[in-house]
Image (cartoon, rainbow, N blue to C red; front, side, top):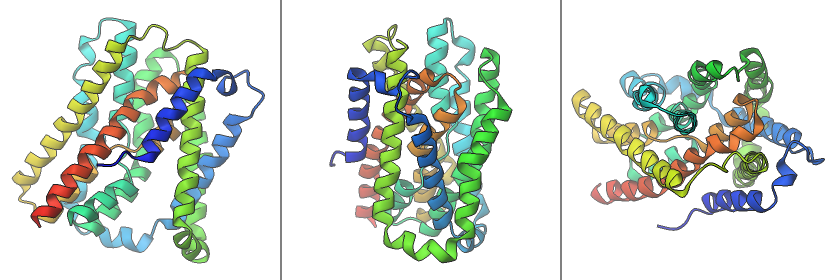
Length: 317
């Protein structure tokens, strides 16, 4: 298994933010917030360009598979974390729990889910449909889940949040779909370059988020044991969700291809959407870096373990 360069660049961005936090702070003269907002709009514009209405329409037929994947992503996974909420005893524990709950409330990945399903020889059309629709559902559902707890802290303004979602995500997606026939071929031709652009924007947002957190001293009370605990929690969350999906697939009598698609699409979380949502959801910009830490750990682990599992499925075909 090779080290993913994108994951490596994210952790490099965190290290750079540690040494040079001033450029990402609220006092910086560099307009990183505006640059990131424009970058997000461009990402989702081309997401709309590549979102095929025909494939979505065709994919609606296998409704049991879609229901399992979306329920795993937006109901089962958040509930697995929610059950621990009554046991929190301190503000520090609540902050750590909230960062994991943010991870659990996020939509599934798009590109890596499709790639892994293709590698494992699963139901590829269903994977494309669910990966695409998950991001759209997450635009509505993820802020609603987080709003349950951010409201208690007086740290959420739903009108502001949804206005930013509309301006930075929904309008660009609709605009992209509107010009799909005009730019669809161009987007497919330069898909690799667009991927580099997407990842560059994400790395920049990660730098800004963590730089703000370091500048405000948000990690000052965090010990290495806390980071170790987060690693164990994210790994346990992945395997718990993966195991539940596996059992439900057997109960529903899914064939091999549908089981692979459910396992890979239902157990993954999107770093792209998580990074974007952290920028929109948390009015305290320094809090965004703290909230992204479990997601980055989960993303790195899911790439490693799912790559291995996909290879095993492919070998058995």
